[in-house]
Length: 214
Image (cartoon, rainbow, N blue to C red; front, side, top):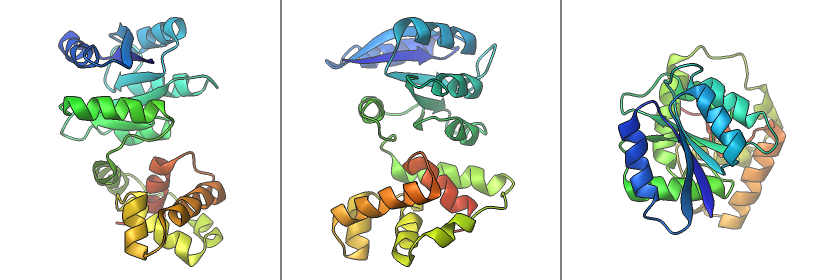
């Protein structure tokens, strides 16, 4: 059973998500919180697997709450919730350790799939949306003097990283490069290890910051 905590300062939003999740057999809403400090308390008490985290909340915001939750070795996975107008704090949320993000008007089936995906230790399964939103924030944020780590990658690994940044799945990358999906997975693992990146989403961020995509 996947235990979820819903953190949003709007009761209607929390109720809507709860109604969706209550219809599933493998997900249970373990608690709710209306502000950043409350979600830390609820998470400590309920030990959820996943937290659906709104960005703008009273007390501490969702970014700081995410950072604190993810600083613990046993901290829950976090999915940032944002609105369609591209919340400016989502980029910071990814850096704070969030596993991904969803639009608040996401379809019920997509919400359930995202929770299951993140609970399994992967990123939210919406690569094209992920790359589009990350590109928006990287384009509008100051670009750090980075990218030197690209020298550690082989030519093929750079190709794979670039395609990851375009939102391609492993199978799509395999088809594009005419290699096996297993080979792509090996390349992805090596890219993450060489660049010391946490996960696939952070690989997308790195690619845009390094000027490898865009």
